[in-house]
Amino acid sequence: MASPSGTPWPRSAVRDDDAGALVVAGVPAPRVAAEHGTPAYVLDEGEFRARARTYVDAFGRAFEAVGTGVDVYYAGKALLTKAVARWAREEGLRVDTASGGELAIALAAGVPGAELGLHGNNKSDAELAAALDAGVGRIIVDSFGEIDRLADLAAARGVVAPVMVRVTTGVHAGGHEYISTAHEDQKFGLSVNAGPEGGDSPAVLALLRILERPSLRLLGIHSHIGSQILDAAGFAEAARTVLRLRAHLGIRTGVLVDEVDLGGGYGIAYLPQDTELDPSQVAREIAEAVAEACAELGTPLPRISIEPGRAIVGPAGITVYTVGTVKPVLVTADDGSTFTRLYVSVDGGMSDNIRTALYGAAYHAEIANRRSDAPLALVRVVGKHCESGDIVVDEVLLPGDVRPGDLLAVAATGAYGRSMASNYNLLTRPPVIGVHEGATRVLVRRETVEDLLALDVG
Ligand SMILES: *Cc1c(COP(=O)(O)O)cnc(C)c1O
Image 1 (cartoon, rainbow, N blue to C red):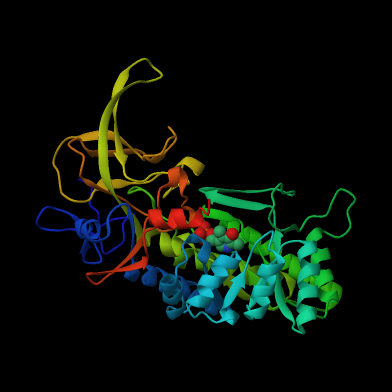
Image 2 (cartoon, rainbow, N blue to C red):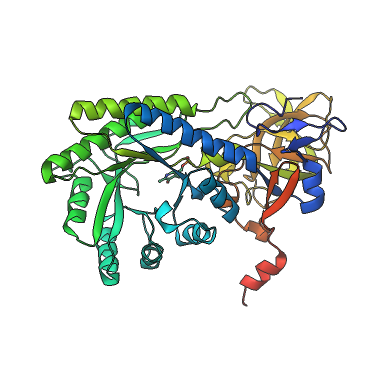
């Protein structure tokens, strides 16, 4: 049986000496199941805090070495609960939000507005007003319409709104490669490239428009190039593009903005054979690229910010399910040969983890209540929804004696699991159970049928 202590499990994960149950932060999976039911998201507080510190330290050191500072914003969309927001803050991070709901949770957690960011390509007036009223430290604007609406809202309140502009650099990264294209076909950001007639790019026009509005204060330029990125090249390329834009604006207007945000997307290990991005190494590579580009452009270094989400919370979380049915299915391969795939159904599915169905994401699972020396079988872990694409783990080798009543743990579900969960088939969303030093604590309670009935007013 694969060791639970390597990647992609939390570093605290071990097997206990009795039955061989999976133990995370001193808490055996069967105890979580007995006390809180399944499915349950289990979040290792120590792992979250350690990862948060690692990013603050690695980027802080790398940029200090080239002569500037860094702010690390935890991207709350990966998983935001009040406890998570407090942990992030206690470890020296700020928090990025992307909706009025995320903003409300971060504020309720006690994060000061000044330490929050607000993102979104289609923020409502109510969301912008809430951000202004909370004194949010930076609003990342994403369109000309938003610039005008925000300027009007701020002017009406007699305040000055701190803004960054989200630009698209043409660099896309994710997985093992990055691509760089001139023109982007996506909803986010304003392009740094001019249209077919030439002239100023949308990004330059947006920056100029902000400088014309006294109720807006231009903090800097923002770029986010993708997710699950496993090398530094794309970040470095995007940084160079943003720094050129900054220098251009400086020459044009005399305003050299103080801040550059390079977004999130730092990749993690989902499978035992995966290697996650090394934060120290990527921080050094980005810092060197930034320093080099500023030297070439003859501009002083800006303050840098980054926005990791998945890399902080992903490996800190696992999902514990109970196995319901086990069904061997005879499958015919392309070459005409046949093999047996064991379909193992669990008590959740695409409603608690949509990433497999949505992106074809790969995950790793292990039996969590016992050890087994049974020969391995090719397993597909599926949920209980009315859809054949309801797959949690497409392919994993599990002991062939996996049976109803076993607990199954899926690794690295801390990011974009609970935060993307739905009520499909009117399943109730699982709780988030914090585990730390042998203790469990409910961070978000399980939804109940009463919650569903309360929302449906007939
Ligand atoms: C999603 C997102 C992030 C976080 O991405 P991760 O892959 O979770 O690190 C950061 N910044 C922005 C603007 C995002 O949209």
